[in-house]
Each structure stands twice: as C-alpha cells, then as structure tokens.
Image (cartoon, rainbow, N blue to C red; front, side, top):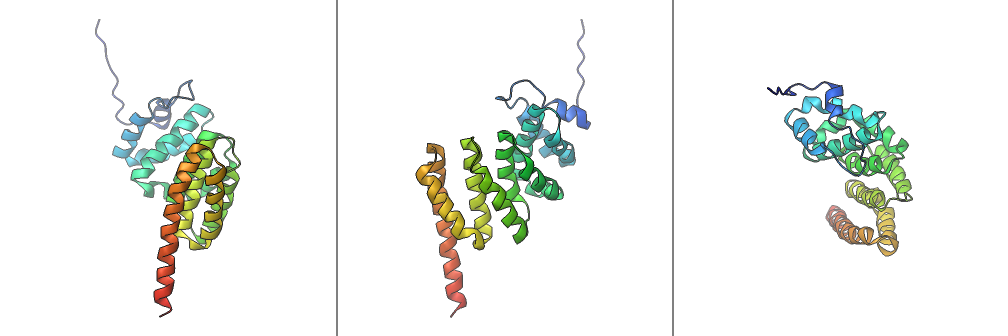
Length: 197
C-alpha cells in the first residue's frame, strides 16, 4: 500500500491553528514546530494571533506560547496588535494567557500613559493564584520601570515585598530584578547629576 503525505506549504488559519489543537493543557503540543514555521514566514503571524481569541482554551494557550516565543526574536511583529493585546491583558483570566501576555506586552512600543495602564493591570496579576503569573508580572513591571523611571519607586517597593514574601521562584526572580532596577536607578542618578553640572 502506497502512503501519500500532504505537505503543508501554505497553511490557512484553520490549518495553522489545527496544529495547536489537543486535549492536554499541560503539554505545548506542536508549539515549537509552529514557532519555527512563523519565524520562517512572519506573514503567518496575524493568523497565529487570531488563536489568542480561539474558542478552544488549549489553542488559546498554545497560540500565546508561540506568539511569545516568536516575538522574543521578532518583537516588531506584535506592534500592529497593540490595542488588541492591551485589551486582552485586561480581560484575560486564564493563567496561561496571563503569563504569556505579561512577557509580550513590555515588548510593545508604549506611550507613558500605556505603561501606567499596563502597570496597573500587572499589579492586579500579582494577586493571581499562579506563582508563574506573579513571577512574570514582576518581570514585566521591572521591564516597564526600566523604560520609564516614573514607575521605578513603586516597582522597587513591590519587588522588595514580593522578594520577602513570595514563593522560592518569586524570591529568586526578585533578587535579580532588584539588581536590574538598582542599575537603572544608578544610571538615572548619573544622568541627572551630569545634567545639573
């Protein structure tokens, strides 16, 4: 019997998202394979992003995972979806979506008002039951404060608190973030000092 294989050269939306379907939320399924496809063909990114609003929670989770991995290497792909991502950041209740969004949103080009609004949402993520969501929210807040020093004082205080009271993962991340934020504060002081001379 001769077997024939269909090569997926130009996946339509349903084909791309079908690769992310599955029953096990604890598995990433074929997310790495889809990441490679989208990195090779960035024109597929809008089709991938549609998956963040898919009716299937497993597809939503895996699409968010792929979008995060792809945007780590090509953050500019996120920018056309800024409004949708900021809206989803506010509305998302699933922990998997939340922790991927917390990683992606600081990669956007944000106005100061955007950063303030995003920081407010991320602070609410610190109340999430998932320590992974909390850890990525801490990281995102630190990343925002590194770009906007008006957010530094409150962020440093929050990270101090979470480093004292959080899970072991949060405490470990918190120590790294305090060092990161300390460098930002030091650089800011140096710039202000040289400007006053």
